[in-house]
Image (cartoon, rainbow, N blue to C red):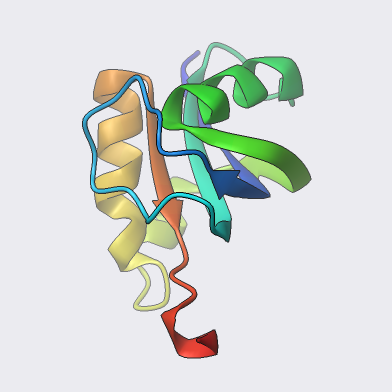
Length: 104
């Protein structure tokens, strides 16, 4: 059974990524969510950390994880995450970060 598990973490973007993606500026820490396709509904922090490193994040501190509930994507509060879910299913992972611009 394929599932998408969402890992919450904070990390600093290093500026070096294995992926071509719209990333934050280097040297700044961000709160992030990693959407990771997995074969089982269980935590896999070592695999998630490797994927975070591929996205270019260092100093990773996980805050928890959980299986993405597909029904939640039909609600107004979570509809915006549907694209991340679909990308994780097709590509293996997707990453969302929260901009720190409001705090600057």
